[in-house]
Image (cartoon, rainbow, N blue to C red; front, top):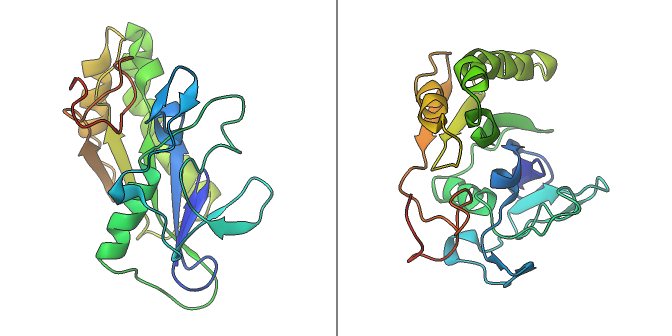
Length: 203
């Protein structure tokens, strides 16, 4: 079972087998399909729910994960489609490394950094802060060495120092830290968030 958490997602046939933590801000919560203050309700094929994918709700109960699955966490905002369900469904296509009883945190997927691109100081100190955050995650959660940190490099942004942040994200040298570059993916009109519309402007 796969669990996602920012929300927690679980994949398998019993709660909390393989656990994946989704960390970030609005980019991870998802704004795909939102226009004029409403979500259009359209879920792309790669984001469809699956009974083997669960999430831990804000009320600490398990339920089948479906977009927008951050609505009870990113409260006060309109949530739409984010990268979580597509990630979980892709994991399932490769098979879930289901372990024994209880759950194991397999990876932390993190998509954030736009706010740090607004000033030179923040952008230049981003790499050190990101490294500390990853090490703190590992220490505070007592993560196994096999747990992978997946950093999504920014697709675009309005800050003047986006490329400085992207460079820091893509050049992480800590063990078991991988980077996935989102640049080139379709963006909403705000040039910040990913969209579900394939023909949207690419940044």
